[in-house]
Amino acid sequence: MTNKIRLGTAWLGGCSGCHMSFLDLDERLLELAAAADLVYSPIADLKEFPEGVDVALVEGAVANIDHVELAKKIRERSKIVVSFGDCAVTGNVTILRNRFGVDDLLTMVYREGPGKAPLGHEADGIIPYLLPKVLPLHQVISVDAYVPGCPPSADRIWAAVTALLRGEKVSLEEELITFG
Amino acid sequence: MSVITLTINEQLVSAQSEQTLLEAIREQGVEIPTLCHLEGLSDKGGCRLCMVEAVGTNRLMPACVTKVQEGMNVRTESERLVEYRKMIIELLLSERNHICAVCVMNGHCELQSLAANLGVNHVRYEYVVPDLPMDASHERFVQDQNRCILCVRCVRVCHEVEGAHNWDVMGRGVNSMVIADLYQPWGSSRSCTGCGKCVQVCPTGALSKKGSTVAEMVKHHDFLGWIMNGREKNIWEYR
Ligand code: SF4
Ligand code: SF4
Image (cartoon, rainbow over all chains, first blue to last red; front, side):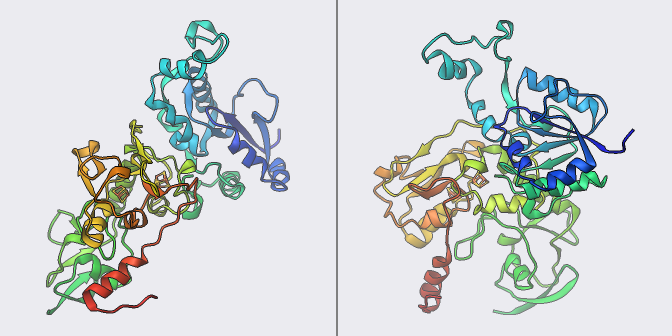
């Protein structure tokens, strides 16, 4: 048994920019790898969010039923859940579609275009059923820490992650919590 | 004008009887957040961020529209005040569409920096996400209702300083909208002189220069000080 932190990162309704910024930790990734095992992440090929995760960084807003299911699983199986980046924290760009009804949205994006479009209904099993309104993560599950930014800079991420590795609360300075 | 004494954060200080509480507080070097207040414009007590506690009453006082009084005893920091200030910022952020990442004022916005300053790292209220228009009919400027916090600095600077009174507020409560020339497209407003003062004093991305893209808009309101010094004190200097 190692006493390394079990770290998971997940990608909901976002652009993956937060994960790109995570990779911008550069050489600090080696330090992180020495202190934590990455047990789930879109940058690792693991299919199922495992049990017993210590820290989960969640990128993206909650936009469809798959996101809701994964968010709930993450909450059940993780000690600390972090809203990672503006989409998770505020809904950000993802939430902009809330001013349209889901049906109008699907029409604008798919049906009015060329070719055959998915209906976007639960039953057709092609795209996950869209929620009527996109929600920030903390309105779906309880969240323990927030790392705003679009994307949060590598320095922000490092400040949060190192606090978590030390077992401390995430309490970021003023210049590290601006939205945007 | 007479001098009075009052207590600010347990310090006995003196102030001119004509001063507002906000002026007296800031004169002591005490930081207190404001959004609708701007040096050179009249005060309206709209944003409620400058609320302070006063000994002897449970009612909070907006410092910008409260005159100092002999013997007043005020506190500018307390758990309650911090909590209310955060709530105000969160309500502003949830009421319209503040998507900082794609906003012309990203990195230069007073609302954005005040949120961080007050420790607002998420919003506890439901986002309203209203469907609001933009007006790009003016040849040089753009108005984006999605970013407006209804501080009415634009309305005041246009009326009080430029003297054109292009801007007004239409509607009530959350439905209030800043409108040009009694609800014309800004570009066809005949009262607008195109001076751009409103753009410069607007604390958010609601008014911007046409052609600015994300994070490009930077505003300057030093001109207000120069104009007011000239008008009121006959001091014309460009510093
Ligand atoms: S106006 Fe300010 S707070 Fe609103 S989106 Fe733009 S930068 Fe963010
Ligand atoms: S347009 Fe700008 S200055 Fe005018 S009320 Fe809105 S936020 Fe304030």
